[in-house]
Structure formats: C-alpha cells, structure tokens
Length: 111
Image: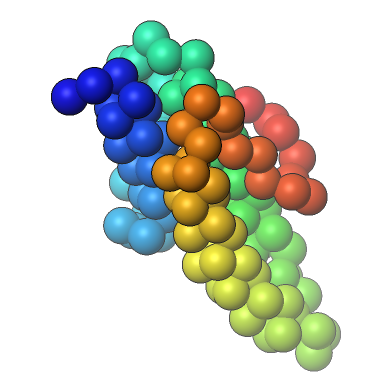
C-alpha cells in the first residue's frame, strides 16, 4: 500500500471510528492510531478525532442534564445529527486532500 493510500485509510478510520460504536471503542481506535503511526498528518487527524469525541461526550452530558428543562431534548437530537454528519464531511475532505489534516469547526481542542 502506498503512503498516500495508508494515510487516507488511517485518517478516515480515525474519523469514522465514531460509527463503529458509541462506547470506548470509538475513542480507542484514534488513540491506537495516534500512538502507532509516524505520519504527522495521520497523527493530526487522530488528535482531531479524539477532540471531536471528547467534545461530543461533554456536550451530550450537558444536554442530558438540560433534559430537566425542555431544551435538553432538542439539543440531544441536534447533537445526534452533528455526530453523524460531521465525521462524514471529515472523511470526504480527507479522501479529497489527504495531505491536509481536517479540523472540525466549533470544538475545543483538548488533546
């Protein structure tokens, strides 16, 4: 496998891991990719994917706490849509230009 193909595969896998499971498996895949690869673009994509996962968990917790007030349910639905649409956009961007890491908009970068 060429380096560009491997870069596309690992980067897409780190962003698409959210579709595999909503448990720790979704977070473990980007962590494993982050520690096993030497490619700086793949590492940047794995870091960005981890940040997106962490942000989703934080926003989900806040929205779940807000279900006491009526606004929590619509926020959870919007969060569900975002968690489905944004990784698809990231994968499409990565496959189009594998030499640039994708950055999710409006997230806090903790990792």
